[in-house]
Image (cartoon, rainbow, N blue to C red; front, top):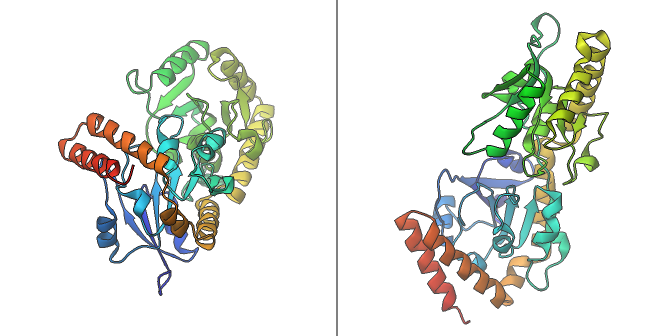
Length: 350
């Protein structure tokens, strides 16, 4: 460990990075806003020293770390978009540790761990709500509830076809549906009922963010640990996924034609949902869980174990992944890096 605290190279998204400092880490972020790849030497140069751990926080991009199996420090992958990228478990198997957002994918990641790795090294780390997501002030400054049913997010027939199709169908069943793009923290408090959609059955960040904003949430009935973290009919109301008729019926029930009883029900859901998120699903909670996982990795000496037990099958898998991305990343410079990495792996003793 570093003399002035454990040095953590934080590659990718920001997420709860700053809360890791409260857990005793010195954090240097290496942001990724477009496809790119870091070698160990580049990471050390950017950090000003060799880090004690490297954490890649998901950016839904091609593999960002070169020579990963040779890193002399602890490595971890915080994976969010496993429902989108089928190759993620293969790449995650090259890390010492992994945190997975979707509970239903935990077993897939555990199956890819190298020989000798215990299942406990894959952590379920659900989404959360940033601290800025909070109910708007009550009293004279209360925000007007000017949307009956509101969805906030990108809706595009090309990039979000399932979402676009469902909202079109729902709009015919519930003409008062409003769709907006913008800041959740500004828009969601204006909804009498906030709508969530989970195109691939993912327990997404919008669930936590809507509840943190003090919204009465109407969300699909899904798996991935949703019913372990929240209770339908207490923290929110669920509808049958992709069923616009059921969604419209549930929305009308929550609105209760404007009667005071409907207002009371929505307020009860909103209060309970906010309380649950604020008590257990903020950045500090996820930072504490990831910090505990990293400490476990340090205690077990995982980097030394990995370096002294080369996993030939994993190296072969990495080589194929980099060959794939050399062909499909679409950028000449990055393609050359990936091809060189694949060649290096092919000469690494296989």
